[in-house]
Length: 345
Length: 279
Ligand SMILES: Cc1cc2nc3c(=O)[nH]c(=O)nc-3n(C[C@H](O)[C@H](O)[C@H](O)COP(=O)(O)OP(=O)(O)OC[C@H]3O[C@@H](n4cnc5c(N)ncnc54)[C@H](O)[C@@H]3O)c2cc1C
Ligand code: SF4
Ligand code: SF4
Ligand code: FES
Image (cartoon, rainbow over all chains, first blue to last red; front, top):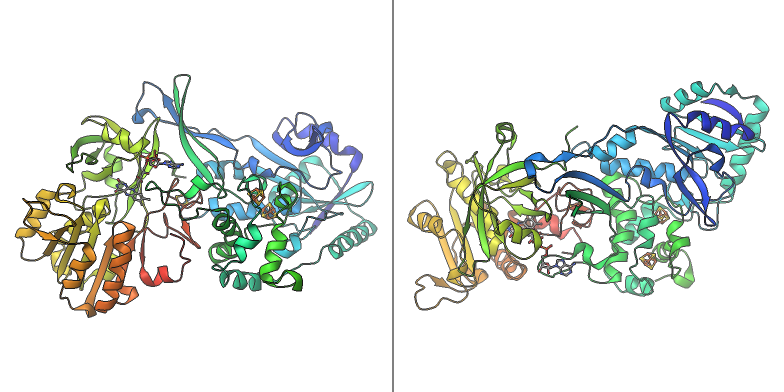
């Protein structure tokens, strides 16, 4: 692997150098919370944060986007595609779990049989610089889902905090290109030793809690049964967990007529909403919170293995910290896994 | 890269009322662009997303046979926004279409065997497409005995009545049209679909059944087929779930790990038996 080093104090300057060439998404502080958002200047960025409240999926699946449109008085033969040439896009300071989440989204949207051109245009324009986690939070469980606080999967460059500097791991061609552009220095041996210490210390703080293959078997055999009802009783079906989740990708498509235009819009939707699967006849295969929450868990920890051979969860912990009724996905999983006597079913 | 969300433009050739309650109309469309006509190849059982700009999109099974390359039929039951707009279309109007989507009926597996076609309600539309396809002179000899059981609640709700009379005349297809409740002028069979199926005498060894219709019909027909000796691998069902994208992305049509829009809508019973009962 190729390594480079960069002074922390230089980050702002480097970002400002890139800002004309890239649209840059980075963690910023807004109304006391940390969010990934588009920055106008390098000094907006904060890097001393645990994780952002929103996930960076907005960079590839915007909350709302126009797919096609035409004027009110036109018909289907005049439809315009909204496929603008994408400016190069830089996601700076993503956490390793979030970078991995893009590999998952690729499985869905870059499926060779049905490629999603809107997603692919943004994805191809995207470079991801991640920041390894020296202090995983209480809600993090990336190692359980196959990641780690310094996983480089999905990243083009990975930054490791060693005090006054970051060590940069150059993961991909795209990353190498960027490093060349910034003309960054090579690393010394003692700096790499420091890096290893930081990484090992952090990894030791976050041990995997379950074996995913075993978990899948247990979930598959527990589809029926009252456990779901008991465990998810407090769920409000508010869908917050899905909006914050970096891997949740369900969407709706609606037509909207405004200002002399008809637009077909795609927007985030949630499997936690009752109308999501409601059929025209009025029949709903997932009528209550129980079936809907079960869908969310089964999708991420069973169906995704069948379809993509990876979990549909990267363990970022957002659904844990954002749920208004503290329904902790880890507790639900552990209950099925049967690890802790007190909540074994 | 093809834009899978971009509908191709279609022209309305005809939009005719099928049922006495005027709730189902059959829409006949033709291609506005020659290139689309050339590249649009489908197998019976597949569906498309039809769209009326401003109202949105909805999925519909293709009701015509692929032997007709110039026209596509859709039988649309009016229930809401998009279907009402589709009912209001006149010849000459334009409509958007994305597809073909889904897997369709298992043509390979059906070849050289007997086919038992069982349908009810507008679910009969793709079975009509399939029946016309296999009855076509170019295809008929690839299939052995063909039996069709088709039911509606009352005679006024039967679709494709002219075609049913044509099939009636043919000696190479056994047609059983039935209604739940006849009325005085009805001379045909009375009784629900499963009861009629029970009365059939067929060689189950080499028979594949295709079933599409309302949930109650399916629920009571499956045990009858099992009793007759059909294995789960010999029974194919076309399913309906709420859909939006039709290409396995929007996440709403799954049954377990299968997406009905891409892995289906046609599944055999053996496949379905492995999936959770959530449909
Ligand atoms: C693979 C497939 C093939 C199909 N083939 C056919 C076919 O050949 N012919 C056919 O007629 N149909 C077919 N359908 C069904 C058809 O797609 C639906 O009837 C259609 O989507 C309805 O669209 P709409 O906009 O008209 O209805 P909508 O406006 O979406 O509403 C339909 C009905 O549901 C109610 N409703 C809507 N939203 C809600 C809600 N959130 N809560 C409660 N009630 C609600 C409305 O009041 C209305 O009565 C098929 C479906 C699938 C999946
Ligand atoms: S688990 Fe929590 S966040 Fe998710 S829908 Fe239920 S109440 Fe809302
Ligand atoms: S399910 Fe929860 S922990 Fe897993 S990726 Fe989504 S938000 Fe993060
Ligand atoms: S309809 Fe969108 S995933 Fe099947």
